[in-house]
Image 1 (cartoon, rainbow, N blue to C red):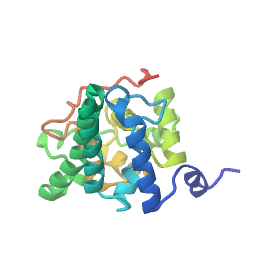
Image 2: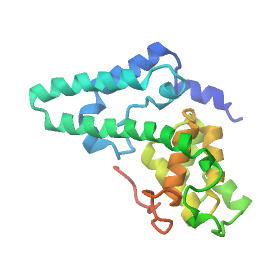
Image 3: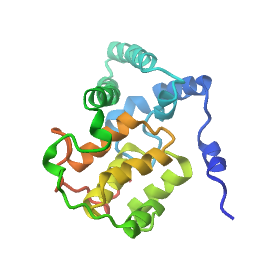
Image 4: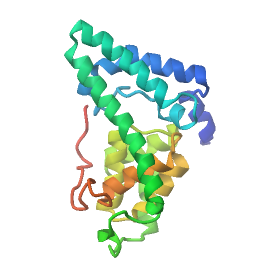
Length: 225
């Protein structure tokens, strides 16, 4: 018999502010220094894993920012170029999270329709069979399927894998991006409307600075392995 999703999630995540602080300290003293070289690797814990704690208010963006900046000053004094570059890239990622708030505040309709009107009449394929295969990790593409099964089992995906599975959904299967947005909302432990809207609009080409609709991420290429 299948284990309940709650039992699986409990093996991966432990909520609470003390665990959020522990996750932050673990990132600062571990993966952060090599973040610039490893942030796209998906075969190891190379990111902060702070997004669920941030979403549920167990740690603030302000605390993360100032903790990282203190580490930046320390590494700058030590002459660690990789450390400084890593911190700049990580803070840029935090900045994108805040940008998602700006976007949703000023354009509150973006969870329902594209910011750009060029996709307004795009003939999306409303195929429930394709959508079910994508959700269940039965597309036949190993990287996509592994990502979708990891999402169901753990409630989390590396950002690079999120891009790959979202691109596959929208550009290979040509399913409506709103379907993917809704499924992420239902399954991600760090499900965040603003961040998810930014991500799916970016992938589908609905943003001025997003991927063009004809730009595809190869689902057969393993990232960072």
